[in-house]
Amino acid sequence: MLKNFYWALLVSALWPLLTWGKIYKYNITLKTPKSKRWWEGPESNTGRNYGGWLFRVTHFREGTFCGASYYSPLLMIVSANCIYPYRYDLDGTSVTPTFTDEDIFGLIDIVYTPSKFIYQKLYMDIALIRLRNPIKGKTTEFIKLCSTTISAGMMMTAYAWGFDSMTWEPPSTVTKNGSVPVLDIKLCQKKYKNTTTKLSSTSFCVTHPKDNNMCRYDGGAPLTYGTELCGVVSRGPLCSDTKQPGIYTNINKMIEFIEGTEKNINNGILKEPKTSRRSIKPGPNRQ
Image 1 (tube, rainbow, N blue to C red):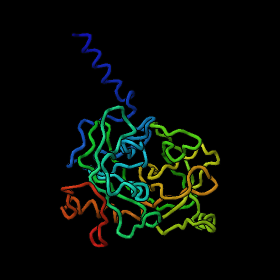
Image 2 (cartoon, helix red, strand yellow):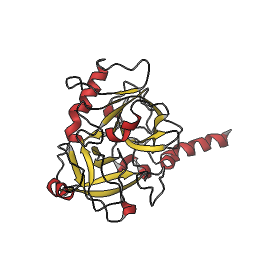
Image 3 (spheres, helix red, strand yellow):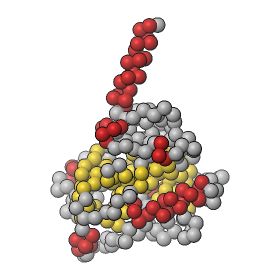
Image 4 (cartoon, rainbow, N blue to C red):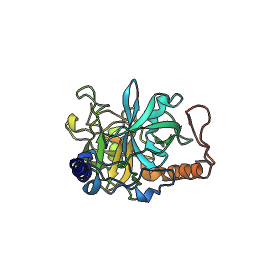
């Protein structure tokens, strides 16, 4: 009995090292303030899995198809383009964490996209996943929205798993990251001048590493600056052509949509779906 007691103490002491994450006292609930579970950065609580806010959107047949960032108890931020093909039939899709071996996941109820978003276009390429319930787990946490103006030369951190790089590297459940510099927007536009890809006012670009294996560019995957979410991978070239810049949706340009949607959900303006899990586009005055 005493042996079991000491073993329990040892596991409790080593658990943060085994899970490579900060251990919170309680699970997230609908009433959990975001500020109580904000990611504090890689030095404090993320380890090799980079934080309890980083998720993958998966389908039971097709595997991972989109990166996601946990923003508030019921909302995750993704790329609208990457989740669009599943928007009318979300059965079989879920969000799974990258930071723990706990058997936890979240079911998706509905997907919100800006009213002006058009599939395969870059303008307002962002979506909010509404979960059925908050994600459980004592290592689950949120990420702050970007508060820094994005400018050329800033070094940011990109995350990916390799599901957009399967031509030379099999996808992995292990998260990888890497530093990438923000590219001057005029130079980026010049590089895409003779292509069908047209940047938008909500887009910005980063320079990919020359080595394809170092490219971190899965659809919907996040880009962070410090402890904040500043971009999500938008539609654009895959890692097979790292000469072309990576295109991200600028979170600074989408804060009104994100916070407006969250506010309307909390105020009961955007009701929880009663019948089927589906995708909707809030009107311009109902974010």
